[in-house]
Image (cartoon, rainbow, N blue to C red; front, side):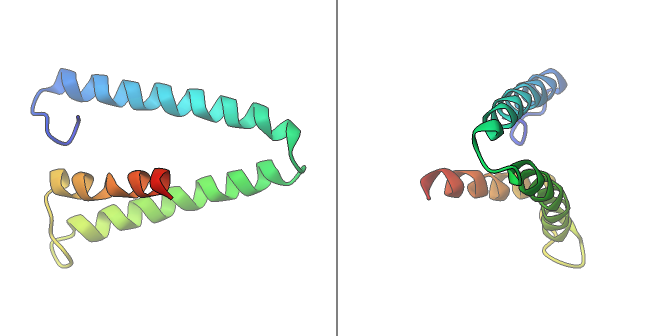
Length: 89
């Protein structure tokens, strides 16, 4: 939605929907950790931190002019396959 849009209001709606779903999923996940081992929250937190670093590095490699040099639109379109692959597997 955001990658293909030229309109700012559509981009803002897309970011808002993503932030809302992320917050909803995060609160659900954290409430469910009471049912699992006590280290579950620590592992989740370290995975979240690592995901932020890895995703930023991946985007930078895709868009850097000295590396792959894709446009931001194409970088986002390529990166959308990662969550789809996660759902399939």
